[in-house]
Image (cartoon, rainbow, N blue to C red; front, side, top):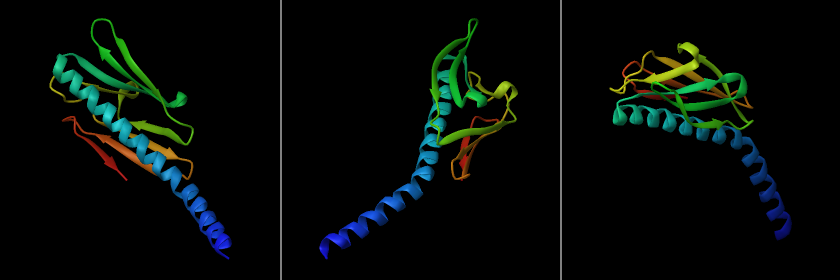
Length: 134
């Protein structure tokens, strides 16, 4: 009897884990992206050089760049298959660039979507403020 109750509880636990996993992965990717955007902003202010993030939507990845006389890629992150960059709006060449004051050259939004069609929107405002919309 005890073994059958444990088996039922285990089955319920496994099914609930599979249900919530895509949402957790989407939240994790969104938080990481926001952290990297803010990191680019901090580097721009500290070094007084333009930094930015380039979004390669078709390849489902983004790159951190230092935009000086010779542009230099700092790092690249490829998103997992469970989360996709759905679209980037308002950013020329799908890039968010921060000037030496931490402000962006233009504001825009990045849309992330998971396998259950749930979305998170990362909004970058002109002042450089980054906000996550559920």
